[in-house]
Length: 80
Length: 233
Image 1 (cartoon, one colour):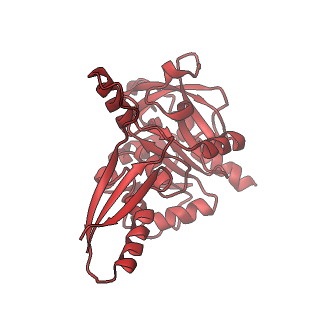
Image 2 (image 1 turned 60 degrees about the horizontal axis):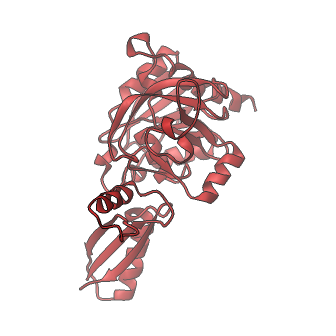
Image 3 (image 1 turned 90 degrees about the horizontal axis):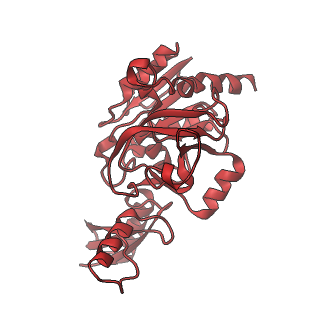
């Protein structure tokens, strides 16, 4: 099974890369861009057939290591 | 007293910490991160560097190093636990300190002496200092931007857990004296009890006149000072 995990800074917390890129876009004239957020994508492959159980395990991995729950949210998607 | 100074793969400030503690007469020993016991030590310092390459997030892998169970136990026992720079990041990832450290506001690596104002003295980094003291020590980091949500910040303020704020030479704390975008100019915090403390700049690099400043001495001397206070309780 293949998973795609999207990890993003929680809303309201400082995101210097997003802010800097936002300014650069505005400097290029894209003044209608209202928000720019950076994140990280992790592609993970696992053995097993039970998608529900595997997804639950990936969620645990995210809370334990892959994301920092203090400052980040994550979304898990089965992609294959 | 005897202090353990932990070496993760990628740690690079361990000898500076041992030397700094030696200068103030505190015995310190290097301990590899695979060691599973810290029995016999009265406190522990997680020094700066790039533990485990800072892969994933700074401190994210290091918090699962074998030695960390003993660090957590030492924190729970009320003994001094200090994280400097990368060590601060590890303590945040381990959940021993609130908040997190992310990329600097201007996305640049900062390596220069900065000023800090002491905000609270109930910690092993400030017990030998006084509130309002201004110290000049080197900052050396890319991910030094302290962030925390509003509830956490309120708790830090209420409980006196903010140990240091970035300031100017006169001690004024404002946007212009904030080098990296840290919320509230926060440079160092403690846990609720006070025995676990983290600081982004490097006191161990300001312990002799030849280094340009000796302002780090009272900060390192706070480890035995705090332990003495705890021992007397």
